Image (cartoon, rainbow, N blue to C red; front, side, top):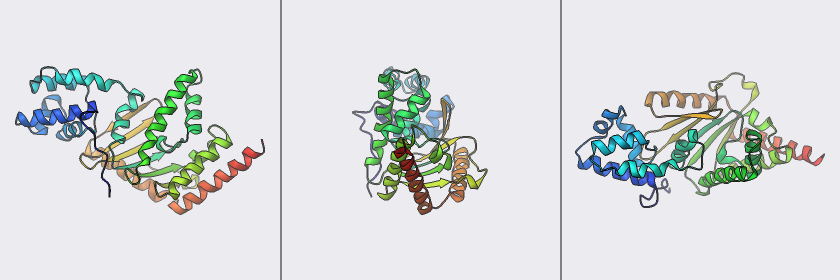
Amino acid sequence: MPGPRKLDPSSSPRALLGAELRHRREAAGLSQSDLGAPLFLSGSFIGQLESGVRRMQMDQAEKFDEILDADGFFVRNCAALKKSKYPEHFAEAAEAEARAETIREYAPQLIPGLLQTEGYARAVFRDGLPTATERTIDELVAARLERAQLLAHPTVPMLWVVLDEAVLRRKVGGPAVMAEALRHIAGLIGQHRAIVQVLPFSEGGHAAMGGGLKLMAFSDAPPLAYLDSLGSGQLLDDPLTVRKYELTYDLLMAGACSPSESLALIESVAEDYDHEAQRF
């Protein structure tokens, strides 16, 4: 099986910083825990920085320069990481997503970005930013579709999504847009590129009533959990916290329809949207 995508230190500022951090730490005879202690960071967090999973912050770069006698290397290069096509609260999660070997996501209201079509993404951004210019919307849509190119790889990341039934029923962009969006998901399922389950309304209350959840696992770093809410998000790496959210996801899967039942429901709702679109 092909392995996860590797970052080239010569082309990625994040990978360059991680590789240099590991080199200088080892040259100084420090463990990951030793380096993290003065910054109140765990050894696993240092490992995530070194592997390129986590983004280095400027205050961390300043301390690394000081501890490792790096003559401003980390501060100078950390500035390049500030440039991102994603909102600030999501930028680090998007970078981690690109390195993940496995992604499991619960979506309570919207089709996840990795599964969105251009028409659906455009409707989402236009609804959320009603006064934005067309150029701004175009740039946001382009960035979202670029993220979805992760699925161009035949096997990595392994993507498993639980969609709340509300995702299917909420008519984002109108019936034609929804029909196309749901057929796109059905196509990815048919290509064995994604596992999708639908959590039906009949399930009632469940373990993730508070919002969206994304779990990311890596071949060379500890797992992460990302909690999504309106205009904000949290990327979490504490092992006990991540395990708690892994249990939450397991409970969602247990309450959801089977993959085959979910595909049948997705195709049925898409057909209903097709019929509705044809009436207008």
